[in-house]
Amino acid sequence: MSENASPSTLFSAFARAPIHFERGEGVRLYTSSGEEFLDFAAGIAVNALGHCHPHLVEALQTQAQTLWHVSNLYESPQQESLASRLCDNSFADRVFFTNSGTESMECAFKTARRWHHDNGAPERVDIITFEGAFHGRSLAAISAGGNEKYMMGFGPKVAGFNQVDFDDYDQLKAAITDTTAAILIEPVQGEGGIRPVSHQRLRELRELCEEHGILLIYDEIQCGIGRTGKLFAHQWVDGAEPDIMGIAKGIGGGFPVGACLATEKAASGMQPGTHGTTYGGNPLAMAVGNAVLDVVLEDGFLDQVMEKAIFLKQRLAELADSYPDIIEGVRGDGLMQGLKCKAVNTEVVAAFRDHHLLSVPAGDNVVRLIPPLTVGEDDMREAVEKMDAALMSMQNAG
Ligand SMILES: *Cc1c(COP(=O)(O)O)cnc(C)c1O
Image 1 (cartoon, helix red, strand yellow):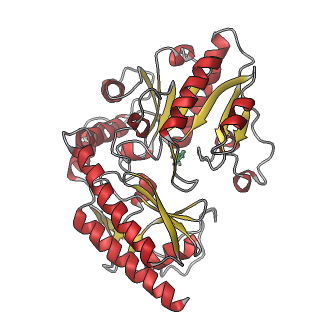
Image 2 (image 1 turned 135 degrees about the horizontal axis):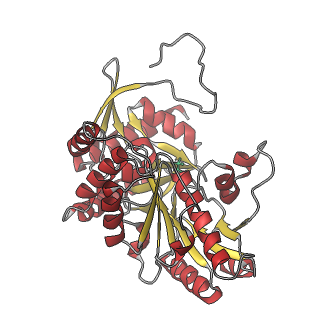
Image 3 (image 1 turned 90 degrees about the horizontal axis):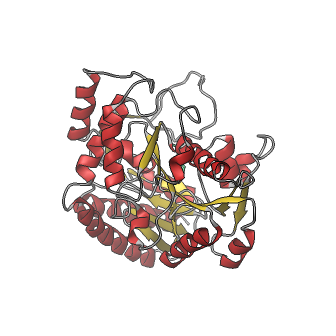
C-alpha cells in the first residue's frame, strides 16, 4: 500500500488504487512489502504474455545493446520484419507503426479520408461509430468514441464522426450518406463493457461498405493479438475483413507500440509527407513486437488460449449462478471476459483487489477479466477462488 505522504505532483487525471507494484513475474505482481497479486487486468490487456516473459526480456535487452532509435528518416529492417509478419497473418498489405492505440486510430482516420480524397470524393470525410465505442483520448478519438463524459470541457467535437446505436442495423443504414468515408467498429467492445459484435453483423458491415464504396475500419487494439483465440478477433468470421485496422496493447506486451494495418488499396493515399511519427516503429518496440509474435504464432498457442477461455468462462458462469444478487451474467470472447454486475462494478473490482485479484471496470457496469494469454489453469482456479471469497464477503456485508 502507498505510504507516500507528500502531495503528488502528477496530474490528478487518474483515480489510482492505493497500491504500487515493484515487480512482476508471469501472471503475478508483487508489492514492495512482498504482497502477491494475481493479475487479471494485465495492464488493461497489454501484458499479453504476462510480466517479464523471458523471451521478451531477452529481445529487449539484446536490442538495447545494439540500437535504440534512428527515426523514420532511414530504412528499418526491424519494421519491415514485423510488418511483413503482421501482413502474412492478416488481411493487410501495409503497416504504419505508432506508439499507442490512439495514434493507430488517428492514422486509420487519416488513411480513410485520404483514400476518398485521392479517389475523387474529397467530400467523404465522415466516420460512423457505435454507442459504447472507445478509440482513445485524443480530440479525434474522443469525438469518435462519443462518450459525453470524455468530451466534457474539451471544446467542440472534431467534425466528421457520427454515432449510431450498438445494435440497430436500420439506423446504421440510414446514417450512411454521400459524405460517409468509413464505418469504424471494435469487433469486441472493450471499454464499452466486453460486448462482442455478432458475426452476422460484421458480415453485414462488410457488405454495406462494398455497396456504398466506403471503407471498413476495425479497432482491434484490445481484442487483437490472440485475446479471442485467433490472432485477430474478426478472423473468426468469414467475409468480414476490414480495409484498415488499428492495433496496439498486446502487440507490445508492455512496451508502447501500436500499428495501423491496411490493404494496398486503402493505404494508397499515404504517400511521403502525408503522415509521420518520430518514435513510431523504433527498434526497441519492433524487437519486442517481433518477440510477442514469436510466441503468439507458435504452433498450438492460440488453441491453448481457446481451451483456457472455455475453462474460465465455465467457472465464471458458475460464480454468476452462485451470486445472482451481485453478478447478472458473463459475456465475452476468449480470454476477454466480462462480469455484468448488479452490484456496482467498481465495488466488485475493489473487493477482488482486497482478495489480491486484479481486474478492470468497464462501461455498462461490467468487470473485465483480461488475464495474460499465458495464464495457467491453476492460476484461473485460484482467481475463481479469490472471486468467490470476495463475492461471499460482499454478500455477507450486503
Ligand atoms: C486502449 C484502447 C484504445 C486507446 O489506446 P491507447 O494506447 O490508450 O492510446 C483505443 N481503442 C481501444 C479498443 C482500446 O482498448
